[in-house]
Length: 258
Length: 254
Image 1: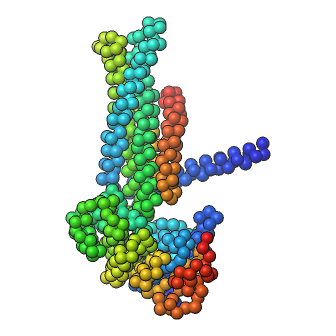
Image 2 (image 1 turned 90 degrees about the vertical axis):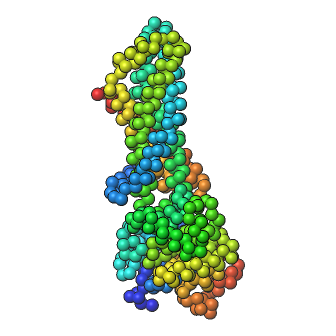
Image 3 (image 1 turned 90 degrees about the horizontal axis):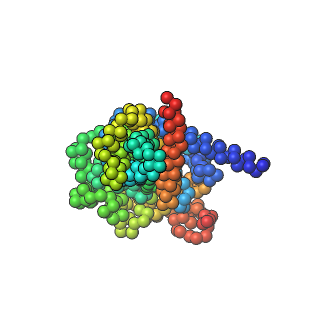
């Protein structure tokens, strides 16, 4: 009992310390980032890396999730002859839940890890110090563009993933389960509301923010050597994935209660 | 040595990482346009001291002044308003996503908002000044040898015409011939700029090639300072051991 208390206390202190450090990092990035000069080229580069080059992996995840969702719903709904609800179930699950969460996790693995590794390598090889000696603020040039791109590009990615996912469901229902194509499309649209899509996109922007922040923070604080870079990458991916799953619940309960 | 004459003045600087004390009551005065070289064993905090001057690290206590301004609490950018810094990092620290000329012109384009055309022209001049051919300008740092990377890094450090240049072990990891070349280029570039140079090294050849004055760092403080000729005649046992490379003496190797 008495050994348990101090170790719990230490864990809490460490957690609070980390949250504080990340907040300071974020504040200082935003404070510097909103002032000129702006690094348009870096921002554009990040838009491409996150928004464009992640499309294949996110699209692939979305189409197979949509397909499997349709198959599984069919298994359930056909038991009480409710096959007509499948289209609605697929579109709602994808826009509200699977689109943002799966895209978020895939981007955390793909982009979060590369951000952490790249910035950590720059830290370890003193390139970040070199930026400072050349009168360039590294937070402004490296971190701010990545956070901006994360917040703006993830919703776009998720929107495309939504369309591809719904299309996956359509493919399975029409070509494998012999549904009528027109009816399927009609019932997809009929019960879909703006809020369903918007709530998914709000989630996406939050997840994008978390991925970039974790990737940049852990890279920036990396310790020396190759093992430091490795640890930074692991920390970035694990922490952003966990944050995505927790935030997903929090946001769902907030958006749901409206 | 009066403080009125000194350009960079560091007073009782302390810096520790966790339990490990790196700088302990560190004092130094460097005059304008001189080349000051700090020698000392590996891992004794030589680079920590220059990073404190540039503002890359924050000292735990102590005072740093530059041209009679107290800069201890200033950000790196504000320090550069007082005197422009340039630094040659140990590993070069070239940006590997940028080509050689973009590396050299980085401070001009980003720090001084110079246009690309004009910056490229100056970059090519600097590449020529470090005796590299114009052909390397469009290569990437990874395509160059270690010695060439060092020279590009030197070109980048001098491109912004700094008032103070720091050299962090400029010859580490290079063969003697390339080292000799780098030492020659450093002396030439520093003289042409009229800059103040602070170098940290444990290469005695390098020291003799570039130093006006020398300081020996031991256990977090400078235990001896003097000119190169004083260094050769002093009977200080630490200095004697260091310049002769004796295994036995007051320095203990861990």
